[in-house]
Length: 198
Image 1 (tube, rainbow, N blue to C red):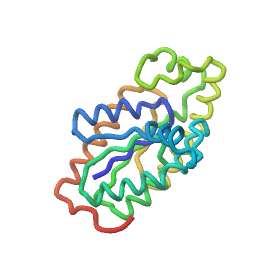
Image 2 (cartoon, rainbow, N blue to C red):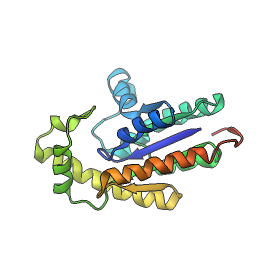
Image 3 (cartoon, rainbow, N blue to C red):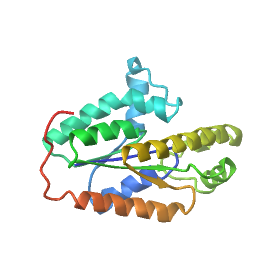
Image 4 (cartoon, rainbow, N blue to C red):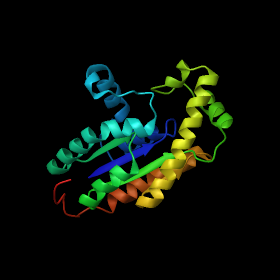
């Protein structure tokens, strides 16, 4: 089974993935690693890591889709975490409904200044790229990610995927997302494996 954790930057996707790695022992791949590997090692993919979630997700999805097909074929449990779009996951879910689960994280209702303050207050975690930005430039990124969060929230509703709003009560919301992921995975126990092509 595959679990997709998508969302805007600095929503807690990596925290959630590492937690699930411990609790359900599914390995995970941060798509940030894939994105930067392709950016530096395969420039022919023409990925701009600063282009925003939609463009990056569109560029890397064909690769993620085919990796997913291989994992499903081999019956390997896995978590993909990063810049993923709901419509892509929904298409994969429709092809393998018993083997695909997903949740998305975003902060569509927080003010940009408050999110900037939270990012600065809770720095020092792995992949702490915001430290490379001054406040003005980081505020621009935050504003873009709020718009991306609003887009994801709308798309999740359209495609019947769970969206968790981390605008407020960040840690309790991550707890709720972890509980949802664990429940989703346990509910597939005993279901037949992948049934066909993606």
